[in-house]
Image (cartoon, rainbow, N blue to C red; front, side, top):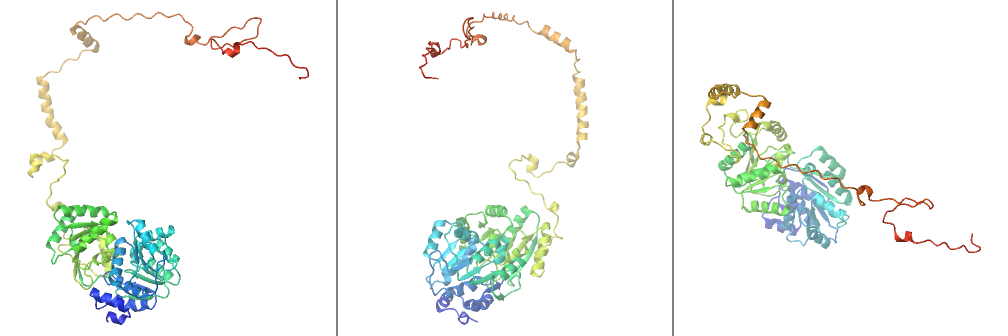
Length: 515
């Protein structure tokens, strides 16, 4: 089947032909015709099967009629990460070259002003992450009452990132009569419940069994010890890889991404980093450098494991075994895309046995070992010890030259060392007989006799005679006046009697009639 048989419009067919595609992928072949009819779609397919075009092309055909109004987008596409949202925007720019559509992107790390301006002009296509979308809605900058098509992409990734409550809220805000296109690589119970609640009689499109890996990917396991040895093993595999062009290296933690990136850069590799703590400009710059070939290694966390369309990745390295078995499928799906061949190496330590068993159970097959397995790998103690390069540790010349101390000296105990010190202490006591200790009083008298006589101390200062109390002393600071015998008592205020109290008081005679 060709694209001409799917029922797409001439504008869309011209853009697809200009992009170099002539034959649709299985999911595009099964999903596009019912999507053009307005049916809900439940698409289950592994990564790299063309899911983005499966909903982009029918949406472009539906949007050829009508225009969007301010703050009221016509279609809404929800993506779990900023990188996926930017990638879908690029797909609309490529396939919608013959359409005059306004496409708005709402993601974190970008100023609100620019995004608000696009919303106010009227967006035919709104591509957003759940958090920023609801932020705009809560501020009153966005209305979802005119949504015609709702697309939920990478739904299982939404579940892993905790976006399911946000998805449920968005589904309740959009009109009940909208068309819903729902895509996921796996179908855990929570995703199944979500589809049953918000999809209306959907067409189920499943082009591969859930959680399967592409047959074009060669998978291999490499046994190793510890993080330091893992980094050395990774460098050895990269240098000896066949048909190596570029590679994506996955770590479980963001801090390990930074450590591994510095290590590769230190050893002369051309590497970039991508993780969730980076700002949006740095993330896009690192991703563009990898796509353009400026760097051939991209160290990242699982933020880049889902849906990134980098078509020509030759290798994938799992520096850490993923703790969730589904993440393994998405990680190695970055290579072997669109029918190309790829290679995926996974570095495994003894602590990863449980996660490895879960992965092999999920994909339904055993993964071959590249070299010795975990049971055949020599223990770390048999490996040659490497010198510590810590700057705070001082080493002797024997240590710097690699010589080890004599076994007898290493095995000597504290008791043996104490016994060796005893003869030396006895010899010293023989050479210097101990001084007889005199009583404290006798030693003090001897010291006084041997001490040279000092000058007589000056006589002590005579005691100051006591001064008779005078007026103003603390004890006589506020004297009281004794009342006279023939007068009323007077309150003693000392010399601080106000002048108005000293004035004579003249009593006026009462007027006749006053009471």
